[in-house]
Amino acid sequence: MIASHIHDALGQVDRMRDLILERRRFRGYSGIARMLGGGVALATTLVLARVEALHTPLLQLAGWSVVLAAALILNYVGLAMWLFKRRGLEPLLTALRPALEVVPALAIGAALSLALVFREHYDLLFGVWMCLYGLAHMGYRHSLPVGIIGVGLFYQIAGIFCLLAPGITFLNPWPMGLVFFIGEMVGGWILRSE
Image (cartoon, rainbow, N blue to C red; front, side, top):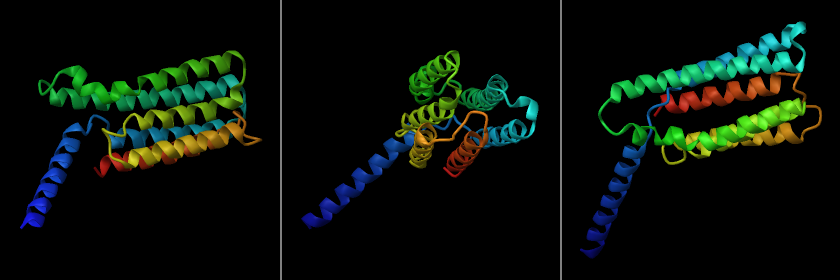
């Protein structure tokens, strides 16, 4: 009899935990937008690798800036559409909390990128971008599906490899393009399958 009550109580605790986690789940990011961003990264990689005239650090940087701009537009238009549909359900800052929690990692990434560009250390950019983008994924550990943590770890491991491996050069767009294509496709799939 006591074992039955304990079993029932544990079942209720599990259901309550699942309910709390479900309510904390952030659904403002679009899996499709992420996948499109991965496609843009791969397409840009193809262009940067094949067009000989683009084989300068500044033109490569311009190409990756286009990828960043496209990804921001895709993802934040999706976020704005989600917010518009949810209008009035909860305060704006509460709804956006998970998106705002990653801003510090992304801001540090921007500052480090500028420092590396000003010092012409372009070959470190891919590793820094991957590591900090992966770190930003850890900020979502309580609000997005658990698989996003794996995507973050993938970015961090790839970033460490790019920082430490000899021969990784900024003028070869393939490490960046492939890592971001794979990461965004898997991340988008995780968000879509939620």
